Picture 1 (cartoon, rainbow, N blue to C red):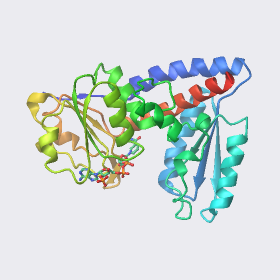
Picture 2 (picture 1 turned 90 degrees about the vertical axis):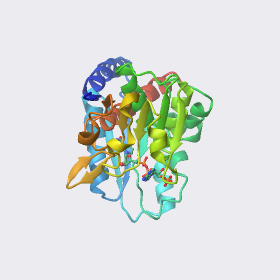
Picture 3 (picture 1 turned 60 degrees about the vertical axis):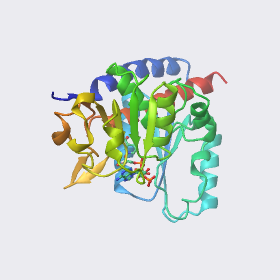
Picture 4 (picture 1 turned 30 degrees about the vertical axis):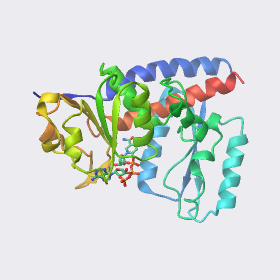
Length: 288
Ligand SMILES: NC(=O)c1ccc[n+]([C@@H]2O[C@H](COP(=O)([O-])OP(=O)(O)OC[C@H]3O[C@@H](n4cnc5c(N)ncnc54)[C@H](OP(=O)(O)O)[C@@H]3O)[C@@H](O)[C@H]2O)c1
């Protein structure tokens, strides 16, 4: 068995075509979808993520702007900036690029952007849709979980009735993803750093999704070849200067049935989901 590679490229190309058409339709009505990213400080990793968002925005014909704030900004000034963007009718989607500075990290960041412009899908009103059991991917849902479901769909991998192990329980990936998969009728185990005997769970899994942030953590010992497991690798780690996932792909490729690559897997799916959220947000705002 050699694992099929679940590349994002054909999925992104398909979604992009649809988004270009939706963007053109909005422009004909005098509305150009416009995204604003708020960046605090000069982290090179954040700059690189922002470049990818800008590129994709421009490729589909939407507007992009960066609100670059000093590391020294205090919480009152920061909240004023977000209020201004929330009230600005020329901006349809706002992202607060994480992480922010230490001075700001205790603010209720997920709830600062108004729900209608919350294209990261972090606001309580938007995540409520997941708690209510929704599977509607046109809602403003968190982008990485939405991108993973679209990747699985494209490759005809239906989570219904499957044993799925999600490793990592962050608010941006693991928790919303586990909820979305449960809504799609998967049986979900949400594992984390205190999980004992993780292999006992992954050996029983039809799908394993790793979001732990540790390069090459998963080797072949975590998988049972008889289960023909599908592996989705969310990790973005640096190993010897190279972007590397949580899964040692060379080691596992002959014991799993399919795996998403790093780079070229969940990363681009996350970016295109963000742009999809921008277009959906603009369409909804235009309806009032
Ligand atoms: N491709 C993308 O678009 C994308 C998007 C977002 C994140 N990421 C990447 O995904 C990774 C995770 O990021 P994140 O922000 O979701 O997570 P995070 O906030 O860094 O949390 C990591 C999670 O992994 C768990 N964990 C850590 N070590 C573990 C271990 N040895 N065994 C089991 N669980 C373990 C932690 O458990 P505890 O809760 O017990 O501490 C925690 O829940 C990072 O590499 C990040 O760069 C990629």
